Image (cartoon, rainbow, N blue to C red; front, side):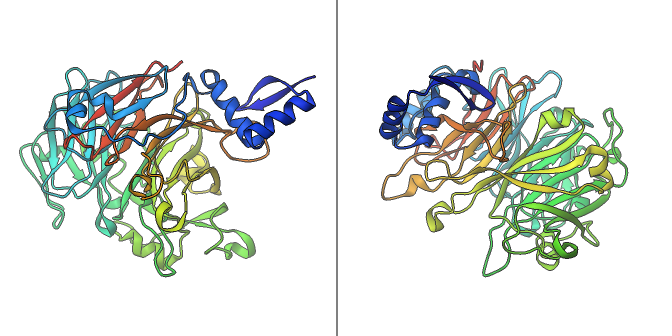
Length: 473
């Protein structure tokens, strides 16, 4: 007989002849493997790609081959096209997160370089020919990049409790700015086009999500230590919400002044059941006093905010935003090698945009993807417009394993469908790296969800490489 099986919200006719079904399960070693086979078989319908990558690469391409053809650094799903955006000699080797600019008709990528303060901090890369120019130096481990609805670019430092967020206006005509991390001074001819946003506080920034009204969410890329909780999540509400349009000077930005709150999960008994063991569910946003310029890591410990294992990148849910709601998903890496802590992806809801801005919503944290030995230490995450799937990049330890080393991968994960849990309905591997020294990072889609850009960080060529995946169905 035939029955319908739901995978990723789509119904598939499946022959359920009892003896044949039993043989399939025996050969595949269980229903989970049968489900994975269905995900691969119907990958074009579910993920927009044909021929997902079945296994992580164990290869390591040599430098000469990678320099001659930078696409050799990766193996992608069969239907996807891989193109080099830039592999210029002056493209910084640790390019991390990136964004297209201008937002309406992009001509460039604005990118953070995750190196020390003497190296280029923020660069712009031409989409037309891959040429690279340095906008700013002086940042330490520049990591997150986010464009804003008011017409600026924000970047952040992944730098312990001293990491800052900087805001740039007119990044295509800003060059040679130098940032002094000690004094927070900015120098250079174009220094007036960059500002340090102390109102957001200082921490180790990785994921930053900016909503159109100026409300922002971000995490502290911190791990637990001798009983002190790991990195917390924070929320910034501007004193004056952004009402729309583009600013003409940085003084008009909603990031000039505002209030920071930290996430504390646990509402039972008058919201007192927070702490270890209470990492999912409903919570509250706790006000951080004197948040302007505050050490947010110290505030998290003092206020006993909920901790996670190294919060990394975060991205907003575009479908929920279109409905006027706040939902963003974020990665907590875990620690693959030391603890077999494979990491996780969580999603946080915070009511409507209006409720989030008024801080009247009840935040809700739920698991979305749980890690495995094949899919571990989630780092970057990108929402795919149009298809509503999520692309997740690994920064795993497996390349360094003495037993079964394998490279880092990029996965596509379905949104949660019409079922009882909050988890993704399934993931497939769409890219594997062919370089044991590297990780992919900084991935993001264009507005149509048809082109995916990512960096192959600290790869074997010795310089940066930015690639583009296209031909999504």
